[in-house]
Amino acid sequence: MFLKASLAHVLAFFTALGLIVLLLFVIKTQSREIAETHIIHGNQNRTRGLFPNLTDGEETELQYVASIQNKDGVTLFGSSEFSVSPYSSYFFLPDTLGIPALGIGHAYHQCFSIMCELLAVYDDLEGANICIILSPSWFHTAGTNTEAFAEFVRPNFLAQIANNENIPGKYKLAIGRYIALHAEEFTALSKNMEFFVDEYKFFKGSKLAGRLRSFMKGIHPSVFEVERVEYQVDSLITLDTKTWNVDKESYLEKLQQTFLSSITTNKIYVYDDYYQQYILSPEGIPRKDSINPLVFENNAEFEDFKLLVDLLAARKANCSFVFQPVNTYHYKYAENNQPLVDSITTILGKYQMPLLNMYASDTASYKPGSLRDVMHLGDYGWMEINFFLDSIYHER
Image 1 (cartoon, rainbow, N blue to C red):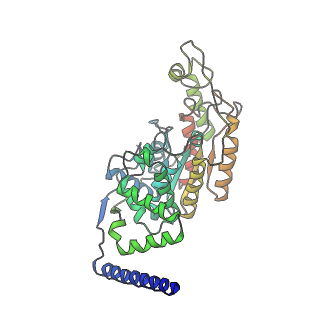
Image 2 (image 1 turned 90 degrees about the vertical axis):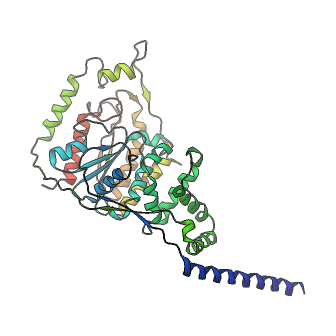
Image 3 (image 1 turned 60 degrees about the vertical axis):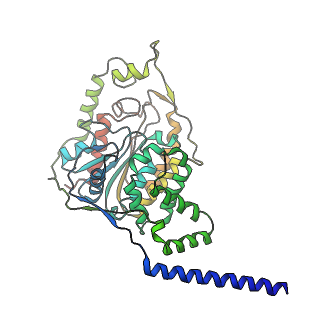
């Protein structure tokens, strides 16, 4: 008797559920809301220079998209090494070689935010000329911080990623996981950010929960959708390619000698004013820093780097990497970063992505002038990068 009653209750439940599903299906087919698309359009008008961040509005975003789309140019991603030196690649390449170049970044611009910026132009990545300048210091942090994420992964970019069905779910879930883990560090979560958090929370659970969410998105799309954004670059700029016949070794030697002759107060190969302000103590004793052994287990930046490379390889981007040095006349135990260098070399070699490895583990292999201080590129270092990029992206 009890069994019959239970079966009757179950049958009634599923009958009611079926009627609800049928009703929702009717609502879906008759009154589905379709979000309007916000179109951002214009011409490419930046073929040189630096965007320290992407917070200046839609025109800045459009110029970034145009730089990625322009297969005659190069888009560079990096952090605090970006400077106003005329030898910086985003000045030198267009001015000397006729290669359009745009730099994106400042301090704390690291692998995860770079990956998200690239996801925003996912459909344009195939064949895009991209150079990512890696800093050893990134891998000794907890990964991209929320300030950098907010500055570079703009609301329009999140909308673009959310609505692009071509992007594999693992990248979207990675964004949701990041925002969820750092939610308290943001002033507030926008609707776009909440979209990714919700996706992550549902899909990290059971398959049934994921399927239910997918079904509900089909029934009430307006509840789940974020604003649709589309970038339309009406025209791209092509510069006249310039011939450049120089002897690499003599060119670099001249820059190095210019740098060395400017130093009068120290023997660690940094500019005098930097040495006085940041290296000498009030008692006149030079400070030295140490590099600790890198822990690879649960290293957020290293995991983000692998995900970034995975994206670039999958999309067949024409990508290159630079690994910067540290000043071994200042830092002790620079050899502690060698396992990181070896791992990065192996990963990029697997995908046949060009790497300029500038790292030195000791003073004997460090090239004075590579850095202007203890960690930021000098003119000599930038020129090494320019020769590297010329060999990859300059069609003679």
